[in-house]
Length: 249
Image: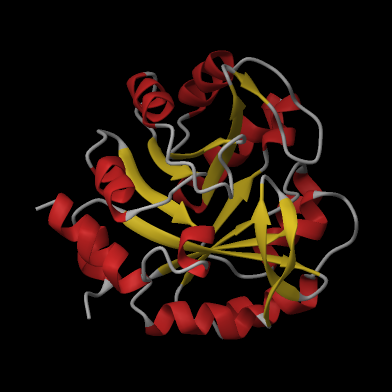
C-alpha cells in the first residue's frame, strides 16, 4: 500500500471528503444530499480512509455550513479517533465559529466563503493561524458564490486581499462541478495558481485517475479533495495515491 506521507512529501495530497449531516456521513451532489446516500458513523468512515493510506481527511459539518444546527459532538469524537490529520470545514464565518472549530482539535480549519464579507476577520485569521487556516473560494464563473448563501464578490479581488494577508492555502471549488463527477476545472485552477503564491487544494468534480494526474501536473496545486468518486467506486484511495505518486515522480 502506498502511504500518503510519501505522496505529501512530493507536494500533492489526496483528501477524502467526509460530509456530515444529522450525525451521519452522506454523499452530495452540488451541496445537496443524495437520496439514500448515508454511509453511517463519520468516525467509522474516517478510520476506513486512514486504514487505506490517507494522512488527511476533509471533514465537513454540513449543518453548520447551512445554518441548520451542528454536529459538534460527532465531529469532536471523529477528530479525536481519526488517526489522520483532519481539515475541518463548515460554517466557519466569524470569530466565534472559528473558535468553536479550533476547539474541536483539527489540524486545519477551513474559513468559509461567506466569511469574505468581513475581509478584516479573514485576513486576521490567516495571519494569526498561518498553516492551520485555509480559505474556501467557492466559485461560479469569476464570482464567489458561497454555498448556503452569502458573499458574491469578485474572485480576483478576494485573492488580491488574501495575498496581502499572506494566506497559505486556498480551497478552490467550482460549485457547478461539486459532487457531479464532471471532471475538475483545470483552467480555473491554473488561473488561480497564476494569481497567488498560496498553495491550492482542488475541490469539485474529480471523476477519474486521469483527472487526478492532471491536477497533480498543475503548478501550485498541492492536493485534491475527493468525495463521490471514492464513494461510487470510480477508483479506490489506494489507486488514487499511486496515481498521484507516479504523476509527481
